[in-house]
Length: 139
Length: 150
Image 1 (cartoon, rainbow over the protein chains, first blue to last red):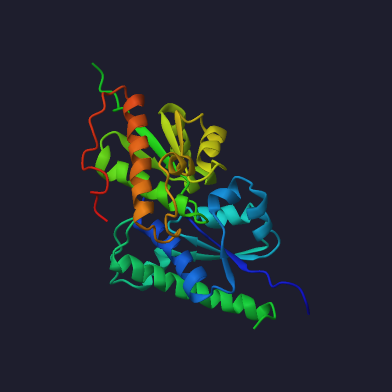
Image 2 (tube, one colour):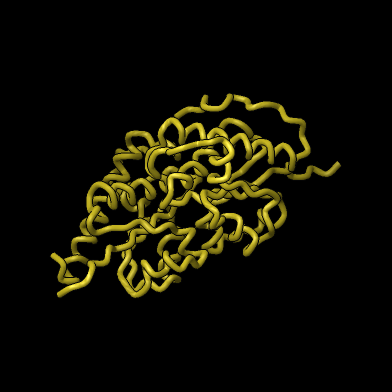
């Protein structure tokens, strides 16, 4: 086998109105910078949906992770419309249900619970990434 | 007199995750919304706007908007024009950085002090445009740059 290994794109929702959107964004950073830096690459949703060629090339034909803050699932929809072969969805609003004690607040500056929620979301995403990686024969 | 809805300005930031300037736009818009002009502005969520959010698109069709972009790709401005109407004003963080002689600004995840100052400068530009669009005399930076809760 030869060739450069392709990183798996992760696209967060970038929501600016709610803490869960901010947690989605932070989760993508935790995943791509702290947990799986060798496997992941963040792709900006706005670039992707506006048809940026480089962004589309990153996702076209491969598997990708969408991290959404709300039920509208903008990131998952954006990936699906941009040629991703398979979109693995992580919903922060589901993650927060599994961590009922967390009360995320803030947007630009998430509170401690918001950061914990982002970490929990990133942990769930990392498991999916490892599965994708194993199936792809990279493990 | 009929009870007409209060005129507000919609702020659309790129929030880009690939450049620190995307984080600058996000922080600047939130500062204007929360501290500097809370009664005059609303934020429109760009991802929702792009995904077909009718409420967001309808607002931008009938109310003035300010697109706040991190780089010259201008995703927020182009998306607003494509799906609703041309934004009444467009601000690009990299251009503001050039004007203010700003150097490195930290990372997309964590802005440094210089990045925070750039966010304040961008927020100032948004306030100027908001006041112009609402035809108000400048009433100053209530709260002052850098004094919002962080």
